Every structure is written in structure tokens, then in C-alpha cells.
Image (cartoon, rainbow, N blue to C red):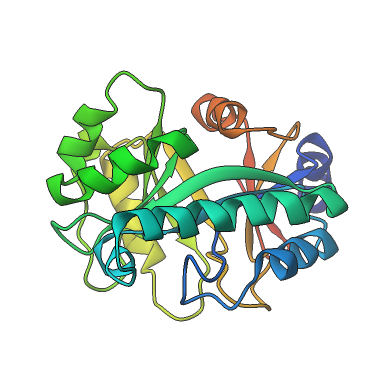
Length: 239
């Protein structure tokens, strides 16, 4: 019976989406070039990816100027979009945002490439300030791996949800604690991601949807609707 249910869910949600991935040199902790990431995801049968390179004080300070950082950040995204054309892979613009106030990370969807300068300037202001800056725009803020060591739970009123299942192998995400917190705070959106930095982790945790999201707007619609499933390895999870 369980196998039948699993098969039905897989058939109902055939599209596989990676919500958390990084490329170098924008994220120097990654060993994926744009080309290799596109190849790797296509080989795994993944249909879409949200490129969420690191965007915060540490990575900003690796560059000599604001302009140099933003140029490289955008360059990585455009390079992945170009590489993805050969593999029928949809690339969605996102960021993994960190503010100066603490070590928390947030997956942000719905911002545009043209917003990068404003985002850069908002990093010093913190999460609450960022929400005010983008108050009139339909963006989605998900706290990434909220119980990784050194991180604290953000104010739930400032969040749209959380990345409870983070499958990056280098850290303990304390998934059970995150799941309990998300339930207590009644966070409306629960997601997971492979947090791809290196080959070998592709497909570890994927969003499964009915149709392919072609951009951030349609991906946000799916997440807000709750009409999706998660795939962890070969298992199906209903968030």
C-alpha cells in the first residue's frame, strides 16, 4: 500500500526542482562551475534549479568594491542560464542572504537582478529592515538550515517559511529541532534543498511539483499553495 501511494505521488508531482545550489566564483566555497552544475543536474534528471549563491558580509568583502561583487554575482547567474540551454534546465534567480546582525542565512526568491544594489545596501540593516525595503514586492524569505550551529531562530513574523531539510553533508542541521520549531511557529512553507557545493550531493533533497516553474514568480506560487512534495534521496516526504 505504501509503495502504491509513493508511486501515485511521484506520478502526480513529476517535476524535480533543486532549491539550493551554489557556483564558483560567486560562491568560492563551491567547486561547481556553471557548466558542470548544469551538466550534473541534467544528468540527475532535475528540471529546474534556484541558484542561491552566497550574499553577505563575508563574501562581499572578498571583492574590492560593491560593483566588483555585484558584477561577479550576476555573471555566475547568467553563465548558468546560458549553460542550461543545452540541457533543458530552467534556472531561477535566488540568493542565500546573510545580514550583519548574526550568522543566519535566508533563501530569498522573487528579487530581480536589478535589485542587487538595493540588497547589498540592506545587508547592514538586518532582516526586519530588509522586509521593510521590499515590503511592496512579492518576495519569499525562507530561513535556511535554521538550527545549524551558530544560527538562531528568526522572528517567525518576518519569515514565509523555513528550509527544514538541508542535505549539505558538512554540517549537522539538527532537522528534528527545526521541524519542531516550524510547527510551533506555524510556518506556512516547509522546504528542503541539497545545498549543492560539490559533486556527489545532487538530488539529495528536491522539491517535486506538478508543472515546471519557469521563473521565481511561478515557483513562489507553488510554494505558497502548498501543492508540492519533497523528495529526500529516494523517499517522498509530504511537508
